[in-house]
Image (cartoon, rainbow, N blue to C red; front, side, top):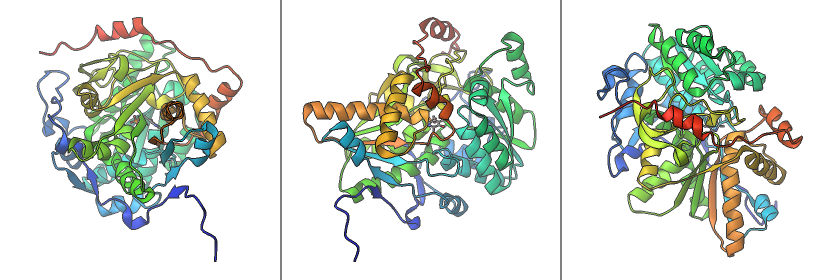
Length: 457
Ligand SMILES: Cc1ncc(COP(=O)(O)O)c(C=O)c1O
């Protein structure tokens, strides 16, 4: 008989434990988030206003107050390609840091596209297909979301056009090839294929692009074609909802490990992987059943939660998408081309912003060199090469583990390792050869962008 290992590294659930329902935090919030507003009239918008962009199945989820929303069987069957994802105990990282802390990470890099993004891409492709949509238009920053939606579209038989932020298009050609392999059409954004893209190129021919610009191009594409809807990889309530499969599984897996986290950490670009891991835990906290420290980590180059204002703003640079109340650096703000392309966004999900405003969650911002240092420490201890985005979560998890060592505390730390970095090797090369730069917080550019906030009420 095989000997039982003295310590357990992975906590695995069987396929029948793929969650049957997503968790909707709206049911547990102390107050409802302020309503989204029409970009032209500034009046609250309803489901009918969103219909040109999204299928009704997703719009109803966007405004739902139900605590649980059933996951359709075809989506669960597609989730079974990679879910449940593993929860790891980072014994080797703990040893490398010499910390008494117990570090756990939920690993979403096992999905076909390499990140958490397919959790919502599959759901979005399914609900669009169900309502007869033929084609999806979307933006992508790092290329992770574009790969995820291209994969999901191939699963459910839809066409996709991806507007890929120019900085990432140039830094990550292999992400483009992956999207094309799944059957997508990919153009660099700003692109000459939309009115908005042509306008940006006329003003700034060498624009590195931004998520805000690429969103405007994809929204224009969807709004001007009958066969096409728009698909967003983060920020919106229904996207965060779909990602809660991460935290629902993690709750069960932490129970298998016989531990409760003291600190839960996720990186935050638009907020979806952070929300995906933390919302099921925060739901417990909001219902008075548990207490956790929950930390969102963002780049110093685009620090919306830590240095932005909580105000109504446009979700996109072209001012076509609904206006939402969120932490923002101003929709005209174009972040420096850091390698964590998925975190280069001027705003933040309204739900995550509300929780930050109410003091339920904390936020920290970090420079990219310190993040890559943490990513390399992690890779050398645990073997997995993290995507640049989750190195932000790793950096703060390591800081917490070192603080626990200094204090002699056996703290339990859980973070979301939301993607692998196999397509990000040029960034690691720059870190390793000492040419990776940090960008100071661009206070002048942010002040200028904040001066352009819409005047609401
Ligand atoms: C691996 C990875 N992590 C994080 C993000 C940031 O998005 P979000 O905050 O919605 O998780 C992205 C976005 O592209 C990503 O690809």
